[in-house]
Image (cartoon, rainbow, N blue to C red; front, side):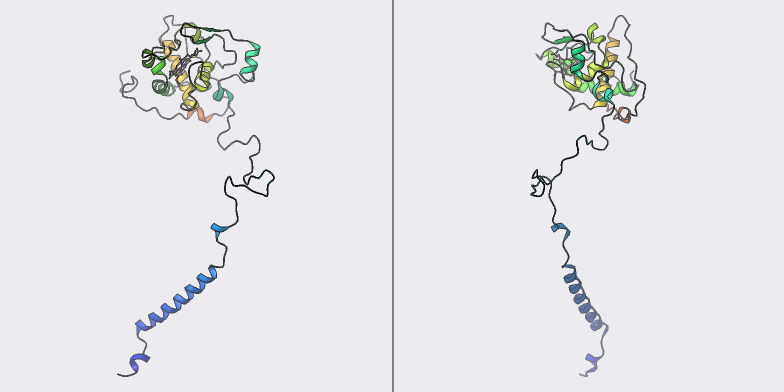
Length: 256
Ligand code: HEC
């Protein structure tokens, strides 16, 4: 066996040597890198943790008063409250013109004057809006208020307190803001639907209730209230979700 076998470096031997250098280099660089301060270990507060640094003992700082999340500024009071802006809230309005309250045979709270409710829709009335309102009405209101708003919904027939009909002069003359207010804040025995029905949908439902009232009015003297001049940039109002077809909805299926 000659020595040449060992002195002549075969390609494989060279590769092995390179590999050793590489491993050494890698180990060295890793050890250098290991000296850094790992980001996941940096000294920082976690949300809601306590702190001895701030006098209130909280690590999280309170937001400055009046902070509004981006896109959540509810500047358009008409749209978000259904109340007149100049009256300054329900309390002031009620003090100015106390509403007379009577109870009907079913114990419902019947109020006939709504001094602080807006009379014009804060959104444009379109066919799309009314269709959306019909769909939402059938989901959230019809089981109590009935298909045309006479207060004879299915669960009322099974014993739930009967709501007043939409189709009498009191609610025919009620301003649109009142309906919005009832959905938003509830009314007497009726719960608030604010958590289930978003603001734009509430106006859609109100528009649909108006069409029901018009359809059930034998005198034919009821018309859709006007829409407010679009003086504010209210993009939310027009961005209604697309109506979803209900199998039993008369507006679906092209029979209209
Ligand atoms: C669980 C049954 C129920 C559902 C669902 C329901 N309501 Fe009512 N609603 C009532 C009852 C009961 C009253 C009467 C409350 C009272 O006067 O004490 C009422 C009253 C009303 C009134 C009359 C307020 C007035 O001035 O007398 C309006 C308007 C109204 N509801 C709208 C709606 C709308 C819109 C929806 C759907 C978003 C809805 N309701 C869903 C039961 C219901």
